[in-house]
Amino acid sequence: MYLEDYKIGDKYKVKAEKVDLNDMIEFAKKYDKRDFHISKEAAENSRFKKIIASGFYTLCFAWGNWVKTGKDSDGMIAGIGVDNLLWKKPVYVGDSLSSVLTVTDVDPSDTKDVGTVYVHYETKNQNDEVVMVADLKYLVKKKEQ
Image (cartoon, rainbow, N blue to C red):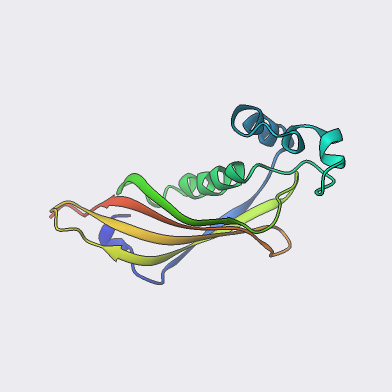
């Protein structure tokens, strides 16, 4: 997709994928080494009672699933910001996360070949509960004229 392909209000669904224990723990060991993310025993003694995913794992997991669709691969240049990132509910091993990306604004910059796309990204678990929301913006190429 190129800048001209994005329309305000358009929604793109990202299919559900299950969260894997080993993947969660490896991420946490490297980037968010808190006991309730990596130790079953510590998690049992926490308010969560089970290992939960790092919020940053949830963000990377959900965004990675959008990237896997390949829908924006032709025009995408780079992410340039994340606003209003909220983790609404914990993510547990075996949860199946799906997302919806909604275009909230498209700004064709004054430069000739790029613009900014703004999206609201909402991720839900298998129970249709919102686990994460974020407002993202990224730089996108215009179609060649």
